[in-house]
Length: 396
Image 1 (cartoon, rainbow, N blue to C red):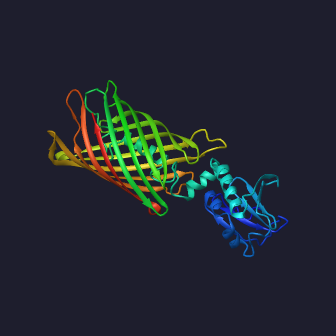
Image 2: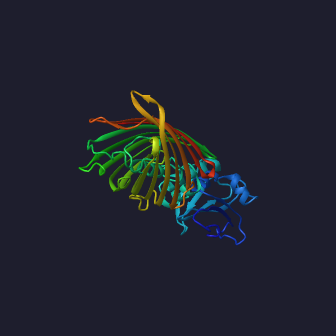
Image 3: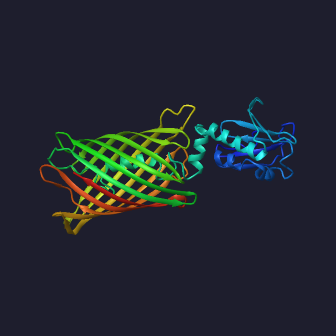
């Protein structure tokens, strides 16, 4: 029964004799995800396993899922299919009038059965590019790590209250609003994402210290399915030196998957570092780093069961731009950010973001901190996934 279960990333359909005993030389077909195996149920797949199979023959197949092994039994000259568990107990019988219709009913039942199975979801994250929770640069896990990095460092195209921008003596609060929209594509993967991040910084008596709140809301379409996700992070910016600040942060996020009836919640703990080097003639260099631990919440025996680390390292070079906007001096910023994911296996575990932005230099006028930036971000991920984002941000 377990000949094909060599690893968690393999599913099989095995042909058995009429008695249900699997022969040692049995043929099998392996799949990377539960969904692929369910979609393949039917005559065409059965005939690759057993060439003599017909829609009137008796046959027994084993469906080896990550957490259980089920048996599919067809009787001679009968259109129904019986589904039995590991102990041979009948789970359900499906009869749609023809074997194809019975298999469609079986497929619907199995999709519902495994929609929230933790081990089945791990297969999806590890072996497909389009999971909305983890495994690609537009997933909930990736976007939560991005939000923490943006909140705790100055590296990137947005002016949203980063790691050291409030280095002066003023101690007023400031709010940032941003809009990001982009498209990603690759083999078996297509995504459109629009995100609306909000940020708030409340400096303490020493304005180098600040309480920071960052809350992005995202709307995404991944391989034709629509999702809504968001997160809220609260951190404390702490100065190490005049040019170096660290920010520990706790973040909670959620994504609603209507197609599977799942609401998934993740919790992140992050530590960000931001080091700025001020150079001559208005040029500057910033080094940003973030280490995030991400875990799923309340999964138990249902839903995602993920535990990952996300390591982000970036560098940004900025300089003056010889034009003004609304009387304010402007600058350009060029940044590179590399992301590496560890822990629970993910389909895409590494990518690099290259960003270029233009905008005003934040200026203190005694009341507000004004800065507006527009930029582009190009994402180059492993497994051939590429992306392009347009970024707009305003801080006051």
